[in-house]
Length: 188
Ligand SMILES: *[C@@H]1O[C@H](CO)[C@@H](O)[C@H](O)[C@H]1NC(C)=O
Image (tube, rainbow, N blue to C red; front, side, top):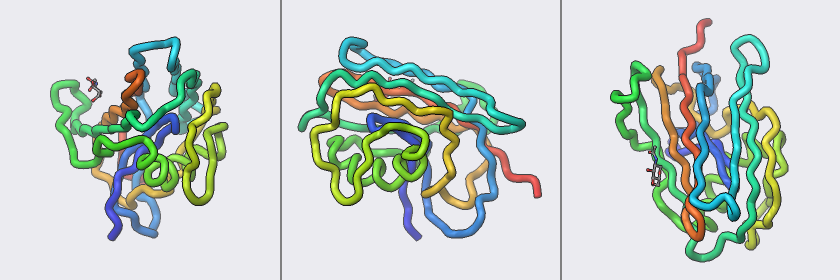
């Protein structure tokens, strides 16, 4: 079994995290509840994001990321995940689904390629590549237009609850987002 963390994210960045790839049918539904963004320098990176209801029980994430700097060898990516069974802020406990702090090029050739692009490549203008990522990451305004993750790269079973993911890119500006998603078991 292949264990990995997945986050739906954006190459610049984005998110959902997860693990254990199987080939059966997904037995869970997800509902993004909120997404909050942050940046230590809006002149280098400005991100706005929102969750839209696009149908009965269907939610999509839209985002706009103004990438006005060029990530370099010192740019790192990190993501942490937390779970709460009640949704209460005090109940969130860290869970071992995360992206350990790593150089962004490493992130591009792993999580970005395996999880971000399969889930968000079709609803965004994120940089696409087949084999290996060739730096530099281009400065541009990246847009996610009502993205609904198709759950490629996610496990068949995820325990019910509230999941919080904090995705960060560091140096020369620290920015990222915090996404809260509610997972429920599918009614058959
Ligand atoms: C998100 O992660 C960054 C980098 O590790 C950290 O500085 C920040 O405090 C975290 N925010 C939350 C709400 O956990």
